[in-house]
Length: 194
Image (tube, helix red, strand yellow):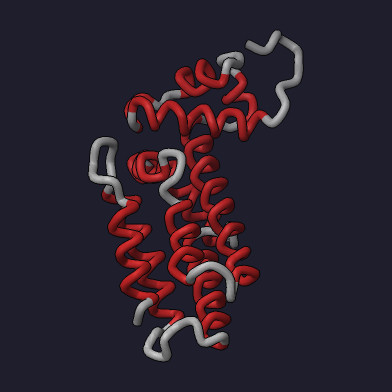
């Protein structure tokens, strides 16, 4: 527990990581501001000192994780010609399911204020599924030029299918549901084989 009056370094990430652990253990119903701060080992008021409320915290957690996956997808362009196309795409697609992604995304959608905050941020240019889709399209176009993707593969359509499926799996998964990773891997393999 951080003593009163002592700055807590990397507060946002510390709270976000704690929230992910809470959701992984107990599902979205276990996520409260108290459970997050207890898991983070910090003062109870720290979350509310950095966020206007729990809805903003949940929304910012989702947006932060979208931004991380979008950044990872931007790195795809440097992977053209390396490993297999399916391995490179899987790494990005499966990153969306890391750290309680389905439960946290589902939680955000059940909280109207959080969902509105996310939508407004995305409309304002925050990276989300569109950035991931664009990066996958660009990567597949690069692989097309290298001859590593069949001519029958249409990069924008494949990117939309991958991102749309990931979105669907995120929104329809819950703790205890079948692991969404195997169907995602099968989809990526099927789409990249043309």
